[in-house]
Image (tube, rainbow over the protein chains, first blue to last red):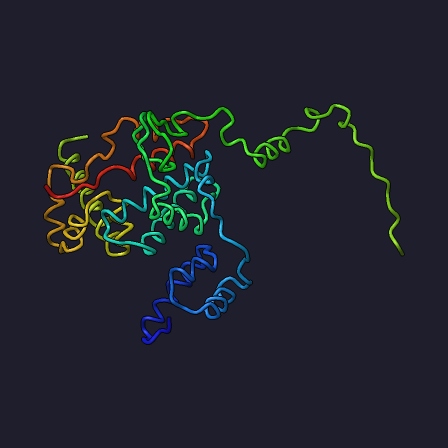
Length: 202
Length: 105
């Protein structure tokens, strides 16, 4: 689609820049603005200083079911729905606003940015396509993301009923191991041999 | 705290609450509605209050902002200092986002 109005094109560019800053992939930009692919590519390079990542968008709905992503995406979608219901904003505008509020939350509490804007955008698409929905937890009554066609009677959320190894990702465990004093790991390594001095070239 | 002092403190809290709420709404309406937990209607009223009206409203012996945690669960999550603090905060945030907005009757 060609833009006729300069003002509407300026608005579209503003929107695209905002999305790029928040970390949107090219496919998201193409779906949410009516700027041409070439212009979006140029814009992306100008804003981020590098070419956009190539390849397909993450398309799995299962990602949203694993423990940590489920918490983050439930927080995002609840915020998004609140904004749609009470603040009178919709679509991509509400996605951007909800994502900014989500980023605020994780910055305040020094959490990892688990949900990318692209994932958040696809989450909303999955909701629109009626593949995912939210269901109230029977213990805390918070709303959490679930597969629409799963059997969810007596649903209990991942935070009321924490799995025993919740959050023990490889990265976190490795960091914890690295933080341990060396003699705890292997007693034989406590006395490290001094390295040979390599003579410096003259 | 004497009675006079108490009323002064209440009025001061009222004034800063109303001024902050109005500033939030003027700065970013949608985010303010989320943060304040009020409906669009209430936000419009707050937005349109004149400084004189704000002063009159603040000069009351009642506190104008209400305690939002009528759910004991959220209160527990926010005040408990377990080992997974960010997690508790996220849990509370999910519950807060699911609460209805305060509107006009």
